[in-house]
Length: 207
Image (cartoon, rainbow, N blue to C red; front, side):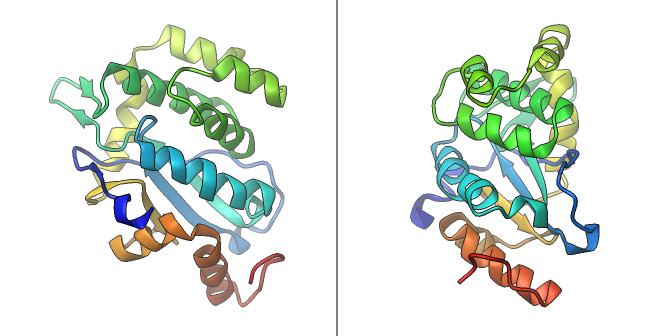
């Protein structure tokens, strides 16, 4: 996957924090920020085969300050109009992801977003049913606001970072292109190593 990690090429950048449910001391959380877009195939692959399994199945989420930034290579003009790399459908899906992140804790948000990224259509209802998550607030967010408005703050955060393509991953609040590529291919291994180095603790199920 590393060979293709930067094929969803430059058109923009991102950022936004989300609330968390797990109860671990804040000092024991390793910051991870993912800059992505909903229809980039390499983003879809990373979220569904690397990030979600690590955070959910291997239970890294309680030890992570995870931020998901659904803007990627989109561009915003002076009037605030957003153009997405993969067209209007991607802008719509990015906005749905943003509404999820604004109204749900990161654990539920990741489940919904990873589920939605297994396909290219809006799978919100199907994914919400699967995890028994009430998404009425998400629907209200999307139905009462414009895409440009929803994505504005994500675009502003993205503009603070310089990357060549997505997925782009910042670890411990630092974006490094080489490290991001390694994280894209072997996320859990590099997360474990970074966590151990910073906190002098080895997490369960880390090699």
